[in-house]
Length: 115
Length: 113
Image (cartoon, rainbow over the protein chains, first blue to last red):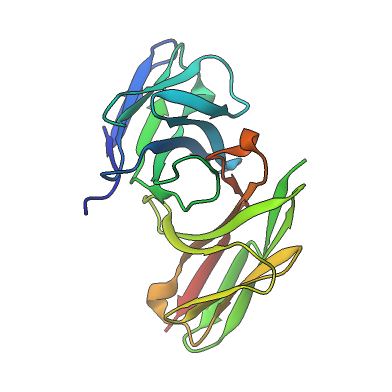
């Protein structure tokens, strides 16, 4: 079974620009969660989607948004980029169908650098 | 506030020298506790899920245990290829926590030959 894939793997943007990251979950997984990883803050939850609906959201500003498509693929968007948005963005998929607690499987991440 | 604390931050072992990593958690109710391994530049790799106090899981040289307030990851006779950052995460009870892993800061393990 193919794992979680994320594209692109690396991105360089300048302040003020916007960026869209893509995530394809493991086949059959309907839940996709997004995380931001930085050396100072570690792994922090951004949001979770299930069946095209955002079920949960972390404490990030509204510049961070996401969506999920009918095939469970997900995208996240960051508008008006700031230097502090430089991070590894990870997506994870899970087979959970209604409850929390199932293990999440992570993709390789997208390394975003904001100059 | 739900919180996960891992110790030590870094651990250096000689090959074959067994040790344990600690994960303390504070949550209103625990839905599940997860251990991951992360190599530099890669996404976390799932290792174990624990749900109830007293539960244990094993995989090769790794063994995870769970109590009501903490979890341990025991590494028996480690090899250099076990060098990585080990992450502990929890999902608290409640529908508002769906899909939300709360991570500790991790323990970076280095095993020298």
